[in-house]
Length: 351
Image (cartoon, rainbow, N blue to C red; front, side):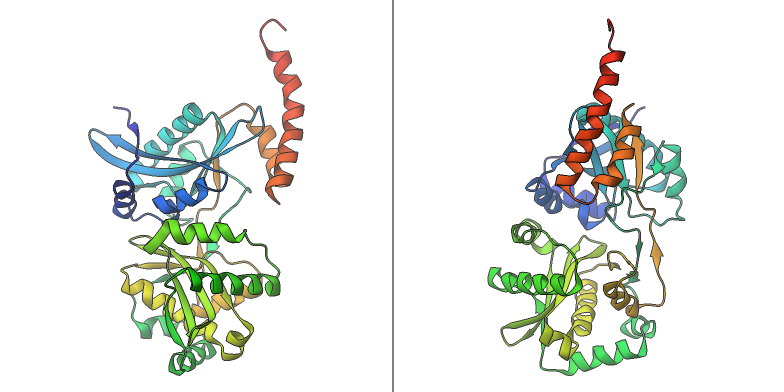
């Protein structure tokens, strides 16, 4: 029997399935709601076989210039057991082709590079891609370990900075309201300018805070009512995933960024999470800071794409140039589309 693709329109049911499959927080309903408010179409589907759900995925669909039509993307998904992975991936690719007329289905699974899932991804016709959104090289901590075990893997100076911060008068707690969120955004702007990275418009972050609710806690370091540093997370039943972080100049002086990171680890463990993903490692100062919290690194599978159209080679050639930004991307893809259209005209019957 061929597994059936069934739409899911119930938020509670969807999030229950994410937790049942130990899925990633970027597969939660609230994350999709935010992406739907910022240029994507969201499609949540269950893969059912003989009355049992064997997998699920939240697809994000981006419209592309004709004739490419659309790209379907699954961040940190799909979700399924290893023995069902190939069947689930095959059905999702068929669905993306028929329902969304996609040029490709792009996936970035929350699966280790050397896991048993790797063979199923290749067997389902996916190929590695350089069109990466989520960085596969990362650091994932096992939150089932004790405080002593976690600290044993940190550098000596990191342990000292954490203990100093936790002994200070700074209060480490969750951000509670919109006024405190505005302090978060102010520090994030300051951090981005200091470190030289780009950020979204403020409304994007406000939408995450509203749409995700308890699924996206922000752990802050407060000196009275003044925020000094924060770690912003997304969390599912099993996994905590760092979204953003920042520290003010005063917070840097007091080194509360070490304390707030430790407070975030403890808060997520108290919430029942078993994994804490630092969300990517690059060769930069922010990553150097992250790497002080463990002696190891993790490598996830990375980005894989399944071609769904004869136009995929033209899309694959154009897309690396388009990744620098949406406006640039649309110009590059339109140019590629312009080169493809004359070919399509010649191939039409009667021409």
